[in-house]
Amino acid sequence: MKLIVTDRTGKVHELQARDDWSAMEVIRDANLPLSAECGGACACATCHVYVDEAWVDRIPAAQQQEVDMLDFGVAVQENSRLSCQIKMNAELDGLQVTLAPESL
Amino acid sequence: MSANVAQPGGQHKTDVVIIGAGPIGLFAVFELGLLDLKTHLIDILDRPGGQCTELYPEKPIYDIPGLVEVTGQGLTDKLMDQIKPFGATFHLSQMAESLEKAGDGWRITTDAGTQIEARVVVIAAGGGSFTPKKPPIPGIESYENTSVFYAVRKMERFRDKVVVIAGGGDSALDWTLNLQPIAKKLVLVHHRDGFRAAPDSVNKMRALVAEGKMEFQVANIKGLNGANGQLSSLTLNTKEKGDYQLPAEMLLPFFGLTMKLGPVANFGINLHENLVPVDTEKFETTTPGIFAIGDINTYPGKLKLILSGFHEGALMAQQAFRYCKPDEKLRFQYTTSSSSLQKKLGVA
Image (cartoon, rainbow over all chains, first blue to last red; front, side):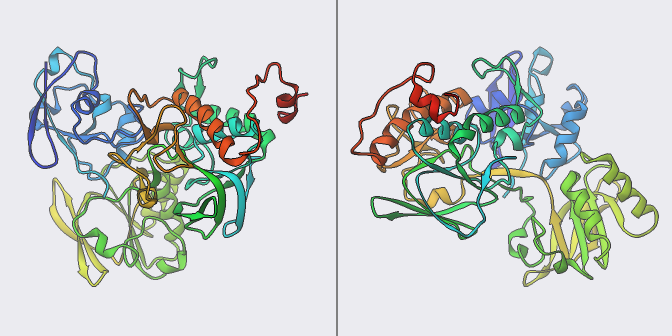
C-alpha cells in the first residue's frame, strides 16, 4: 500500500505504507520533515498535511478532537488534516497528501 | 503548586542547574537529591511538567512502570510530591539564554536576568523551548514587535488601534475579550466558525459581535500589507470572496505553542540534528560537566520514552556527585534499606 507525499520543496515521495499505521508514522518513518511534536496524541497540530482534493471525501471524516486541534494549526485550509489521525488501510492505498507549511 | 519558585532577576549558587522542568528534569531532582546535591530548575513555561502539562495534561499515559494509567498532569503532580523533600528552586516563565564558564563550573543567565552558578549543568529540555507558533505568512517577520505580536505584554500598546486577532483557542478568545474595550476596532479572524475555547468566552464574543462592538470573520490570512514594520491591512481569503483586504494596524496570531531548540543551540555544546549527543554511561555531553537527559539527547538505541529519561537521570546523578563532591566517597544505597536516604526523604 502506498502513501504519496509531496514535501515542502514540491518533491514527491512514494512511501510504502503499512496497514494500521497512521499517515504521520509512515511519513516520519521515511524521515520526511514532519515534527509531530506530541507523538500522535492529537495534541499539537504539528503533523498537519493537506489532503489531495481527489481524496478529501474518500478518507474518514475528522473527529471533533481533530477539528478542534486544527485551530492550532498554521495555514489551515479546507483540506487540512492531522496526519496522526489518518489511519492507513487498503482503501487508502495511493492516498496523496502534501506537507503543510510549518510555524516559522 | 507548593514549589519553591524564585523571583526573576536574582543571583543564585547551587550544585546542579537543570534546564527544563518536565518529568525528566523533575525526577533528576530526586536522584540528585538522594546524593545530597542541591538543584535549581529553569523552564520557559509558567508551571512544571513540560510537554506532559502543556500538550497532554488530560491524556492518559500507560507506560510508566508501576502506574497502570496516569495523565500528563497526574504524573507531574506525583513527581512534584516525590521531589518535595529536596526543596528544589524553580525559575519559571524564563528561558535559559546563555551559558558561560564560571570557575570550576558554569553560569547560566536567563532572559529575565536571573543568574545561576552551578558546578553541573543538566539539559533536560525535551523538544526544546515552547514558543508561540508563527504563521508562515510571507514577510511576517518584518512586522514582528512593531505590528505583529505573539503575546500581549502591555495592553496599552493596543489602545485606539485597529486590532486583528487570529486563531480560535482560549488565548485568541481571551485576548479578544480583553482588548475589545480599548481597541479602536477589533476583528477576530479564524478559519472556521467554531472554536476550541471555553464556551463562555465564545458566547461573550458572539454577543459583542451581535451588539456591533467587534467583528468576526471566517477567513484565512494570506498576506500582510504595510511599510517599515507598520501594518496597514491584511489580505484575507475565502472560497466565496477570493482575496480581499481588511484594514489592520496590529495583528495578534494565537496558534498555540511549538518547540524550538532556542538558545541551547548557542551554548557551544556539540549538537547533532538539534539533539545533544551523550555517552551512555553518564549521559554527559562532550563538554565535561554538562549532561543531557530525556528527549533532547541522542545515543545509539535511544528511545524517546519517559522511562528512558528517568534511567538517564539516575546515571547522570552519579557523575554529577563526583564533580560536586570530589572528596567524598559515592555510596550506593537503596531507599528501601538506607536510613540515611529515608531521612532525606523525610520518612525515617
